[in-house]
Image 1: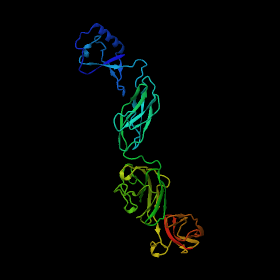
Image 2: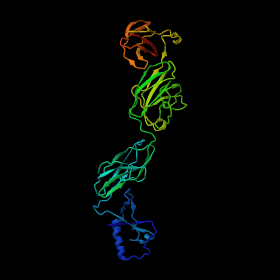
Image 3: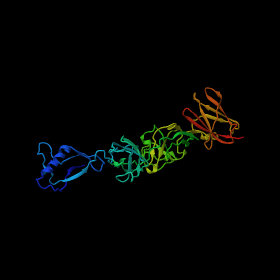
Length: 416
């Protein structure tokens, strides 16, 4: 069956007002049946309702074909009852956009009197992607229910065209085309770096180790003073072209802010940080990232995690071999003897004021040895502890003593 509607073009064979009577009857029949007919656009991308201008209605003359002067008649195919035609549908706007993925989908699906055997989305960096010409395609089942889909394996900072599609026995129909641009940086890793550990602590340097998250690497930011704020936290897509293990000259996260300094980024899990000031509290925080900080493509995980961040005070370092190395006014707070030691070493801590000290022993490579100090004597002036060195190999070791805000390091030589 053929229906007709007029278009505003300049061509018509209807050039006079005299129409045979049989033609009037023919048009009258169509007017009575189809005067309010809505006609769908033939490209089936969007259903655009257009009003038929074939015949006039209302109180005008029964048929006034003079209104058709200067207009073409365009024939539109309507399906016969039960005829299967291509499906129609709409494309969801794109959401959840990252550097590598996004989300879309389709809705308002009509089956065209057939069975929807497949539906999904297609995308490309070129307009009008199809199921045969695309850079990505999903398959999201059958039927006319609305659906959501994920676009994956996208490129950073790239413009994409997206269309939903549905297929039945007559072919594949496409929804309206939507566009979007991916972000310029990678999605942050989901697991944050954690477990900051400090060892071989000294007055001007300390060794830091950690457990990496599930990204490309970890950025280590260190600061003094107040807690971390926005000037101390790296931003996804930011440009961070350098780092330095020397805290005193390391670049700031935000240049000129006086805030956190970048002492490291990369795939490693330990550094020796230098350029410290004795008896100073340093705040240390880890940021797992994916991408390249120097290429502005890194996405940073900005969450905290286990033992991240931490606050560590640099040591007051006293060499037991030379009294000139004592900090002025120290009044010999810690005594370690005998030196050299053999099977044990005694540690006397004065002016402890009720605190229970934490005592650890490390070799010069930073390896910690598990020892439990044995308490020999406690009084109002000092506490005396003893470490069992029977299983230690000969060499030089560092004993780290922490109590209250005090951190001291003593060297001990073990001879066998």
